[in-house]
Image 1: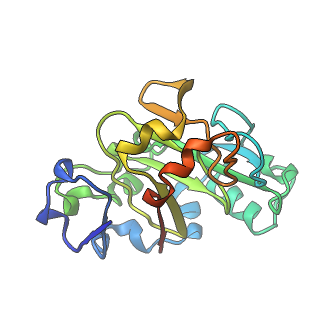
Image 2: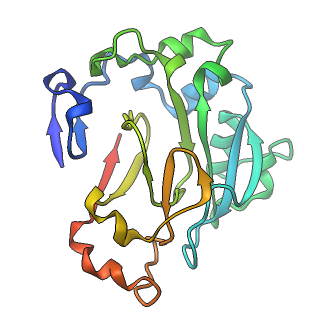
Length: 222
């Protein structure tokens, strides 16, 4: 794991390991926004949320599974604070036992009528001048939200952590064959692992013990 203060010092496509850039979001207007600010600025824009149990037992929780609810960021904020009304689809979900997250929100689509929100994102400091919110996706989740272990098969991910914290569990590409890869469920750009890394079963997946030392855990806070 590397830490670099200024992205311009490196070419992202040449990186051979995960890199953390610190203190480079200050130029983003939205870097100081709270969840309440996002709720206010996005008004009544509805987002799709995937809902599931926080318990980790069994097989991975595939993204195609689980209930779906529609809510605004304000309604999501109310739900995680325990103050939902009957107009909020998340109100029927117990936030103490369930997670909810909204992913793959292409900002040019969901916030197309909110230019100030799109302009609040600016990837120029990462070496991509002219790239704004219109070139970005938004991910929003409650505590204990997670996605199955997977490998993206092309390109690289550049993630800006704006609020809260996110934990990553990472493995070296050379260890992919020990992760019990699967293309089911099918997703064009991803190879999934059959392993639930919140509760690893070494009896079912014995080869995992071969390379456990290569695992890296990272938690990013804002």
